[in-house]
Image (cartoon, rainbow, N blue to C red; front, side, top):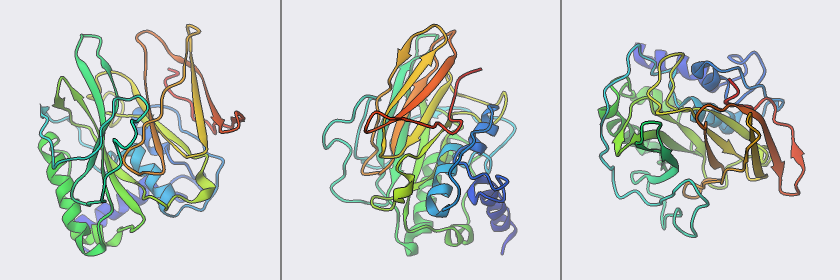
Length: 298
């Protein structure tokens, strides 16, 4: 194994091959919380780790640990890649808007997960690009395509090695890339990871809850325009309720990216407020244990 591939492998073990790195407390989001300077999310679910545990961990950390560098790169104008299918506004997805006619591993489905206005009046958007899983023989080609899209915006993003891609290829997981734009300019400190492909979500993860701050790579190392949490939620989660310290309550909408079995949800911290309570409910209205999935409380 080359030195680069060995280094990559070690970092992926640290990200999500999970039990050893998490002290046998398997959690989709501990890396993201560590990077964001938040408290560790504890999960009660124990292993069947497989693709989902790795997917959840990497989606939230975005491989940020593997690409951690001391200085953020400069921003660049957003350059669309391909004819990305799908769209969104952070509200409920419109019928058919995010479902591609065919799954093309080289045409990402690009969706706006959430958007708003920064304290200084600029428009921010949080995007997710989903790249359908490529056949094994073209996985490295796809990895290069993703890197070529990310690289111009962040010099910290390392070129993948074929050995690494081949070793960790997962035929049951799509690739996702989550990033901010502000007034149309894409920022660095994005997140790359994997998420279960359609029909590949283990039924035992129907109540899956994972989340973390985006645009952060450690304490005081962020380009995020404000504090924004993105949640990844299983199909059995029907409602999320957030109560702020001033007593106001919100129930953020779900956003579906293409035909992914997991839904996304974006929550931005209102200026001057903290979250007091996060509550999760199933399709029957029953409150679910959050397993420590509480954010924006500090």
